[in-house]
Image 1 (cartoon, rainbow, N blue to C red):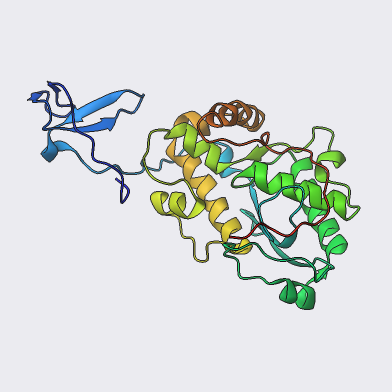
Image 2 (cartoon, rainbow, N blue to C red; image 1 turned 45 degrees about the horizontal axis):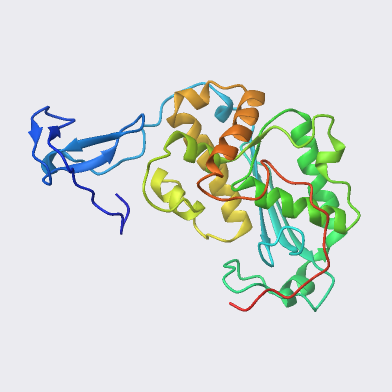
Length: 287
């Protein structure tokens, strides 16, 4: 169980899920069962939760995947700017961009852990329209082949990126493709659906740690993209019910799963993105 998660006990007598003997009230350990509801254990029988076993399963996770991540000035979808972007593919594709945002009036919100300053982006980056045109082409080519684009927390990454494309006069991939921005795979949605009762945080750093996926530099777009790619493959190999879904069905199901999850994890954005219009820059509120 994750650090700080409460250890719940049983209010009533009940059979131990391991040995079947009665666990007197107040002496057992309560855990969510694999299909919902609660199970009670004798303390000596209550094993710490473990990630599911990876299996040699056919499925979308063994096809050509491309993962995308970005580092930004903040989390306001219509206002904040992209400073770096990275894609990592299961076929060895590896592309990185640093964007010159074009203004010294911008600032990075407190708490952003990527370490890219406005000054560095202006000094080392290429003009934002140029970088975004290249990125849009890479994403469009991949999605045109009907292969999955893997994005952690897709509504926030793809919505902010869509606004940034429009801001700089670049046609977004969603408007270049007959089927729109699809198919997309969001490991956060998949993990919340497949293991909905697991306690603890669901940040990329926490979820990669749970599944044993290497994640060297959390917050860095390249490292996050590489970790997200591997995480999608591991999640697919861990849950047969997910692995057997076709790519179009996987995309469609995530729309429904995200809507259900948003009742508990409030998210005003649609999945996989919301077509917002860019807004002028505003300084972020004080920390």
